[in-house]
Image (cartoon, rainbow, N blue to C red; front, side, top):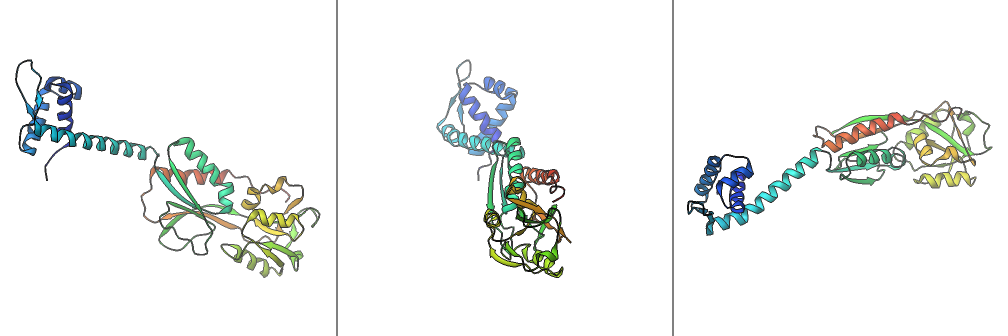
Length: 301
């Protein structure tokens, strides 16, 4: 393999463009002797002269061998420049980030994260995927939001506790907190038994209440549409309620539960020991900030 250095190729290109070693040296910010040394090293590497040097005021002329080296050398210099630019943009946060998310986070937390990232890094490439599997995996994702810690070789930061509240049609229950035992036998619309839902329903059952689940759906809007239609009430975490703008709907009422089921825990995960890109590192910081800024449930719910 030919032992070439990019600075040798840069000197070759500058001399070819300027027509003299002196003007090339001025363009590159070197002394003329330094440029001469670089060309000598290049000629040794390729095994022949790359310039004819007529002497005097006449411009140097590139040799056939020099033309071959210059043609390929310009491509290498362009690729090296593109590489340097890509590295600079990556360090500045303009890379790609792949984030896994789920419905409540997608509606409430993630929009603020995405907006702030794009405000700070307009050319970043943000890729999102949304699913709520029973056995979540980081895979090739940079970051993964999930309602609870996940197994495997991962690290995480807890973003918030997400309390469960009762959403019912207006007038279904008296204003204020609702005792859990009042829900025994009450028709309920609920999420499927995935993620944190089984834990929440078990906590309700341990309190002595066994609501009658009449419909299950993973779509928050559908749950709330059925509550509005009078099919039943729903126990939902605050993020889901806030994301659906329930507080502004006069057909619905939000109630605290007494005793309250343990809150759902929202975490942000990443592969253990992974060196974060600047963009991923900033996304984690912003997610923590956004979660801390979220308003609590309305007083007197």
